[in-house]
Length: 105
Image 1 (tube, one colour):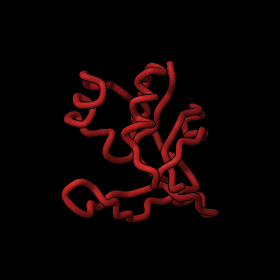
Image 2 (image 1 turned 60 degrees about the vertical axis):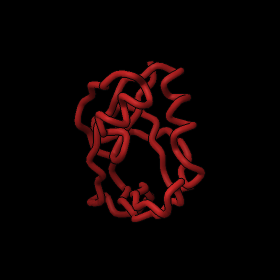
Image 3 (image 1 turned 135 degrees about the vertical axis):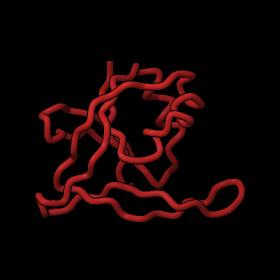
């Protein structure tokens, strides 16, 4: 199993059902030394507002989210779901868990 830290859209049960055909269960965690930045992405019907994680030097900049256990095939689905505005990287969360996240490319 892979660990995936989600701080945005992937926490939505509706999105999870569309991507994985199931609702994921996870645990709350934090990503330190990162903050959220507004991001506009062009979609089929116009521009949409999202957020993206960006690194900072300030340890008081945590991002709150949820870490999920997902299969490698489900992780591949997320790679397709995320736009070119994001890239997947491994990070160590506050709990010590090593997980994948999508940050600004």
